[in-house]
Length: 308
Image 1: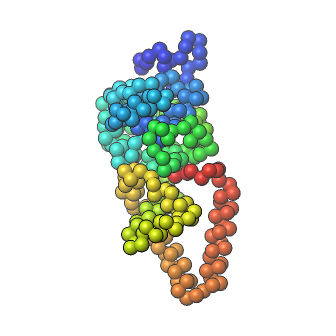
Image 2: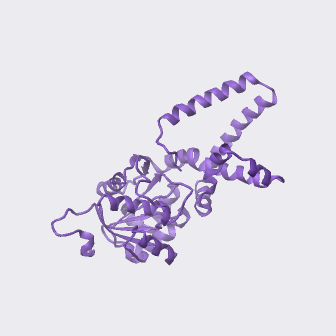
Image 3: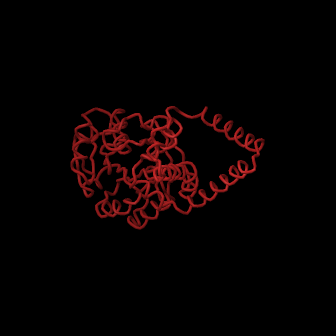
């Protein structure tokens, strides 16, 4: 693979982990990945791919990328990170596939994995071994290149769902790249990932959007928002996320999410029944059990709470 000398490092200097990184989608996720590798001195050159020239220019001015390239050019990088909405996965892979370098490794940051793997198999065919699926469990309601920062992944979990066709060296490169960003790596099967994440990430976002909808549709919505305090702020914070991204996630993982929302309805029924019957003792017992479990879980979590 032929890369500029600048990507190889100065003569006599150690070769970076990723001589050339291509980031498709240089926003919070992709930009922070590039920034962390650059700060660690483990990337030679960073190429950016995106739909908006102004966004790529901003990323270049912020030092997140060195230059903007096409998908065709990006396919010749050593490592390609697709930080795009999961609904754009197939189109992105279709653009990369015909030009993919023989040693290029592609990974993603999608919040669902079964659909991503299916799209990768369809787009890459016999070259599926060059794709290592991944999902960083980190983010915020902020987006765009200006939101990126190198510590986003420090102490956070990145889930990889390697495929049987992945060579160990390909998985190892992706693992080392995320570890260099300060992340802790966990390995799961794609289906297991989607079931678990439906429960602890996707459904909470759906509930936040649904609850915000209910408030906004009330006839006195303005008064409610005027009087809303920290509980409302904390619960609805994640409803400020990207509509495009969450639309794609809700549709891509709808089967697992629908199972989880059914379980949420059953839990609500139990609490509603206790209130309806005036069952103070039963309600108290449920509240205490949940409160204790939440405090015990929170005690072992990093701060601030920015996991998505």
